Image (tube, rainbow, N blue to C red; front, side, top):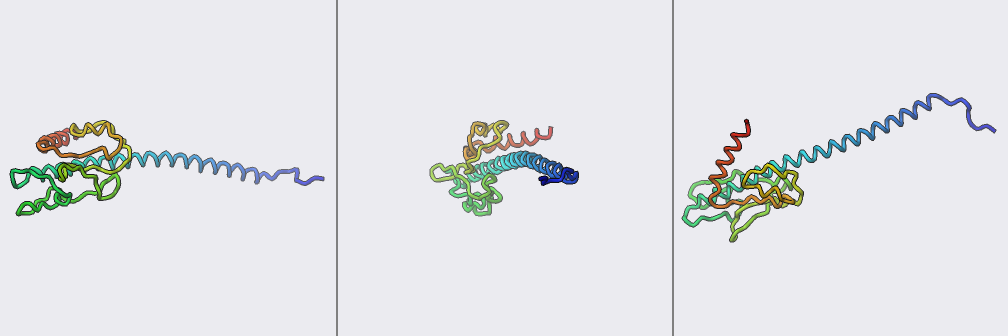
Length: 178
């Protein structure tokens, strides 16, 4: 007993090939989008690294400015980050930094704080991510090339280094356009 038709409908065959072609296009598109996603993620992380380097240097300079503009001969570091925004030791308004920045790696306003005798000498991100950037740091941050995580990037002010870092920053900025 025959159960099927001996003539196959050609329309059904072409629908099968179209379906397989569509599945292959979706698979190829998915692979391409996954690759683009990886590149986009790394690019975004590199931008956050640049921002972290900029903000860290701003905090380091602000800590140095606070220390260097101490009203007495006994130089002091700030006790809180808010002291950098508004220095209450002086009779006039003195701001060493415009605002408290958000940590670009964690997107939070909390920072790791490096203390020396209860005073802030530096800041760092508390992110445990591994950095992409390993070379090309300014001289004062060459130690960052061996860092295993962003929390190892510590922006610490050492007395007497503020003037030399301003000269280095100006040289780097002037040489950037060449």
